[in-house]
Amino acid sequence: MTQTPSDVDLPRPKVEFPCDYPIRVVGDASDDFVAVVSNVIERHAPGFDTASIKLSDSRNGRFQSLRVVIHATGEEQLNALFQDLKATGRVHMVL
Image (cartoon, rainbow, N blue to C red):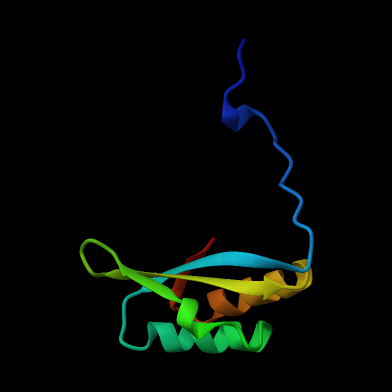
């Protein structure tokens, strides 16, 4: 029997901190989506480059995707950031 990718538990790639870490945030489209997400990111990665934010709308305009690179200092920082983004109630996915 051959194994498919879903049958194999692959180890997560090891990230060495500190590092520049790309984040993609997907949520409901709104005029203040960038501001809401930026405020949360700023609490966890002070001084991140807001000029590096890239915003994309979904095909039907219902969702927005925001991409940014932060300077990550550790797993704890990233976990707290992801939890706070989800806690806004406006974010569906953080990748």
